[in-house]
Image: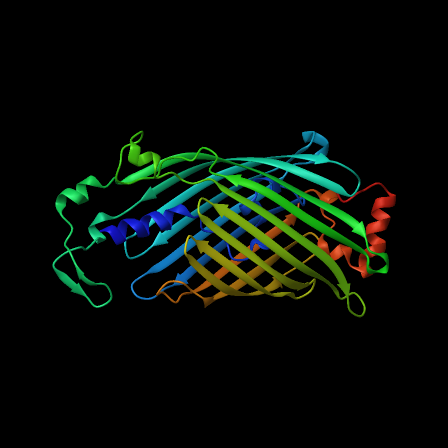
Length: 361
């Protein structure tokens, strides 16, 4: 029972995140809602395979809609998202519903920032009938005890919480001689500002509930996109990125680099480090992606990330697979000079737009 409670507490303490954050920017920062002028719908799944009997799955759905600048006086856009985390052995489920609204500020011709606010509703549930602690012998855990009816009734069926997140996201473009135009993206966000109570075993307002809060999470993101051209009209970008999360005693660092071609897709490598007090887990990430049915105004993208541990401080050896599908459409063309337009082959087109005062932002 002690091991069970500790596992539940660690499982709910840290938020689940997508493995390729550069494809889910509005999911990780409310300030990105409507940032690039693209209306989009994203669907994804992440499944972690652990040693028997654990199985963790996460499902992601989000939609972004940018506002027209002429009619909204600096509003950036709106984002909706849904996330479902599921642990099969206990059927421990977290459903998350969120809505983000952003405001846009142009600091200069080449720099823009957005501020976003995101109210979020969390619903957590646990199936006590799946808990087996008793006079049995499990081949993996050893001797366990049957759960008593009193303990089953003691568990709350569901926990519903309301919380708020806020974020800032910005981008700066700059010329790099004959290489074209590069861009620097940066963001900072804070989640669980209210720090709601999430305990299944205590009433709201009790001392126990005060010790079982949805801990505040601080997240930072930095990415640099450098244009590279090969031959005639083969436009690519090379993009290193780093993302840092701090949530209570937990630290998560993810960094890597990916190379993306306008016509084909992307490939990249990354490394992730998770630290919880004395436990430290290192993970290697392999990113793959493809562009499907792409045109000037809309297109489809598919992305896949494979995670394999390099060093682990626990007895479990897990691998994770993340797969996502992305549809996008140019809703606000003034913002839609995309990263491939920064390539030297497209540099003249971007400058012509600037001469006509149709700037990136």
